[in-house]
Length: 129
Image (cartoon, rainbow, N blue to C red; front, side):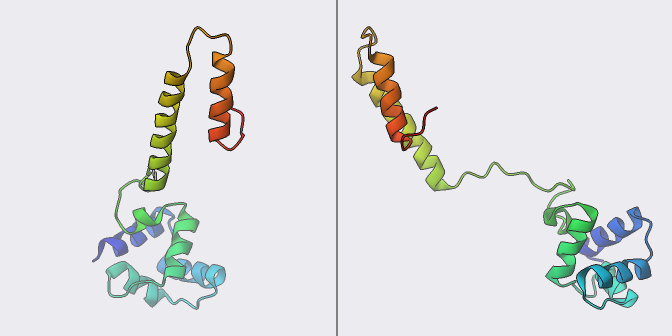
């Protein structure tokens, strides 16, 4: 039995549903005619459900696709702090600019804070912090 099949079976059993009840629920909700024998094949790993049905399982049981595919044991899935390279570079550039601005102005100047704030605002496209 595949791990995917194990997850689908466990989810169904947790909800105390028979394979026939699951098939009926999928047929109604997804609009894909599903037989009890299909549920059995999915759960024993003899067949893989279509993506549409897998997405329905995730929504119905409020679990992630990572969980269904056994990529994690957490039903909520892997939680990533996704930061694409372009965002990391942008943050680095902003940090570099902030250091430059700090060096450009004499801290004892009465306009120091105002000038720094204006430049930082300009870097962000005119948005005030």
